[in-house]
Image (cartoon, rainbow, N blue to C red; front, side):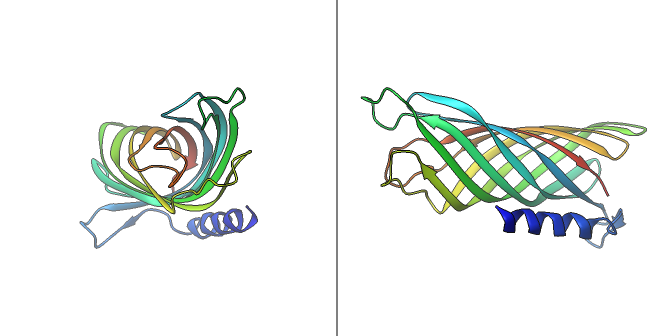
Length: 191
C-alpha cells in the first residue's frame, strides 16, 4: 500500500507544473487531473454484500468537446461474498489493482466555468494483491478487463466523476465464474 501511495503522490506533485497545454496530438488541450475517491463493489454471483474501497491516481484528458481520457490509478476493492452455496457467513474479499482506463467521451454542456462530460470505454486492472478470508486456494486472475460508463462535472478546476464498471473477465481463475461490479466516485483538481 505504501509504494502505490508514494507513486500516486509523486505523479500528483509532478502534475502541479503541468497546467493546460496545446498538444501536437490533434491540436487539443491536455488536462492532468489528480483524483481521489471511493468505490462500492459487489459480485455477480452468490450472496454478495457491498463494501467501501479506495481509488486514487492521475487522470489525463485530451480534447474539449470530444475527448480521450486515460490515466493510472491505484484501486482497492472490498466486498463479502459466498463462494460455496452451503456457507452461512460470506467470505471477506480484499484486493488491489493498478488500473488503466481508456475512454472516449463528449462534453454536451460547456457554460462558462461549468462542464458536463460523458465517457465510456474499456478499463484494464493489473492485479497487485488480494486475499479471500477462509479460501486459501483462490487465485486472482492477473488482469481483469472492465467496461466503464461514467459522467463528470467540472466547476472551475474542481472535478467530480461517477462511473460504473462491469467486469468482462472473471475475477478469479479457480473459484467460480463471478465478476466484479463497481461504482466509482472521484473528486479531482484539473491542471
